[in-house]
Length: 388
Image 1 (tube, rainbow, N blue to C red):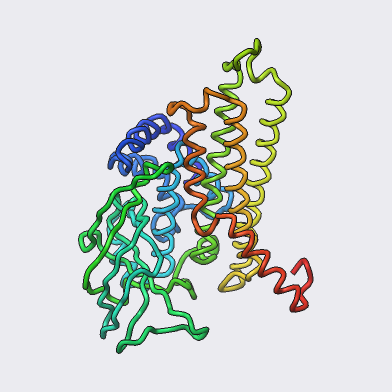
Image 2 (image 1 turned 120 degrees about the horizontal axis):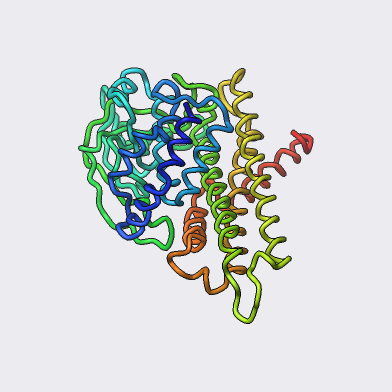
């Protein structure tokens, strides 16, 4: 299924890129993209099997996500936003909520944010929810919206055993949500990552699940790695696709561009060849690291209910590394292309803007390196071996 959808996606690439051009101006993708995704089955093919997907291999998951961002960064961002939301809802929702949210045949689009900016006041069968959220990527295309909130009971915040507020994710019909605001950014212009809010609406418990994920109700081991690890993996694939786009652009432009005061095209210069090969090697290493981390997680979850801290770190490192490599690749491309790189018609220019915007995400920013190092050093202090 995934290979067929991937082939269909590649055939629709030119059509999608035209919509991406329009999205750069409109700050959101036209609704035409929904029909194209239904026809190609690209997004749905990597949903969990219970909601129409057919992906069981980490290689297939990585390949589809990276191919989407290869076409366009904003389109790739929507691919991870919608697939993640649908995957989490399908895996963790109780049966009644699952049946309601995924009641229609075909592709169900869900968008939103898990940041607990809402307050859910406990009632007998659910919550009375009020809140306001940002970064609702693709919400203008969605039928359902996810929103993180903190539970309040009798005036008190409900906390976990560790003493932290317990975060719950609500799944809300788009009709109950107010969508507002502009999306004025330097990169990822086409994602439509605008604001949304709800005011004093009732959300039944059957349409809620814990952010900590806990026990999965359905889904293969590939999709049960937890909300944050799967999110990190997807963002790593997103960056990988744009790195491969940089390589393709350099391969094409390198034979055409002759820099000022030079007689031969870029591709004839040894320094250009070395830079291209270094980017290629790093892209291959990044892909191998992403697939390896996802495979280890998938295999671990065949016999365990949750990932170990070490495996979570491997996924996060792989994702952060992929984003670092993409940012470096775009900067190296700029250095080589010279004035040709500054044109808005140049796809390298868009990659550079998109990767610098996307890298601000909490799961893939350089802060990830600091967090992983801090945890590793703490484990060593506790007597764990360096390979633990």
